[in-house]
Length: 87
Image (tube, rainbow, N blue to C red; front, side, top):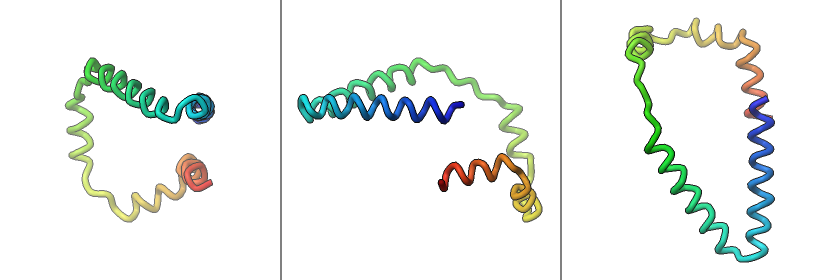
């Protein structure tokens, strides 16, 4: 799913970085700098709306108890995340 596309993106970026390194190692720095500038320009145009309900709900949720933490260990999606990160 989403993990596959991230891995493919990383592989494509590595492939092109290797090609650029063979041409001139300084090209990797220039391309990374330009892509960083493009990223920041896109980020500056991004409008983020704050959701006051969600913030209020998160703040008023109360403290996390030991029972809440132990209940997390029963979730299969949590263990999938753990095995993905560790493995």
